[in-house]
Image (cartoon, rainbow, N blue to C red):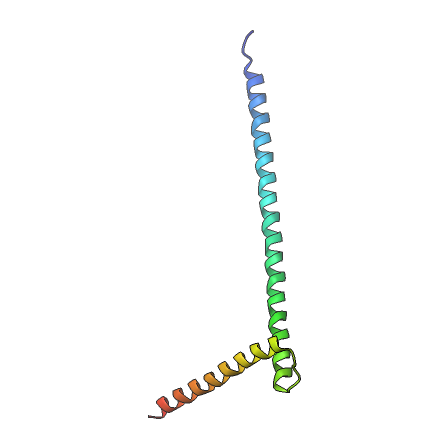
Length: 99
């Protein structure tokens, strides 16, 4: 059987086309996965902001004497203690800068 160059190039063209199509599909999939991961990060960031907001609201209630849950009280007291330390640090800075 004689080797036909036209058949060879036709097969080669088909293989290249298949590979390109497969590569295009993988690129599309990768972009879609990246888009979804970006969406997840965005949702997580929004949740982090809300967690912080929830914490601030509980702390405000704690300062107003409206928090009874011991778990929250312990956390709020830790925050309060750090706030007091920060005020002391600001005082130290003020004293140093006065000199």
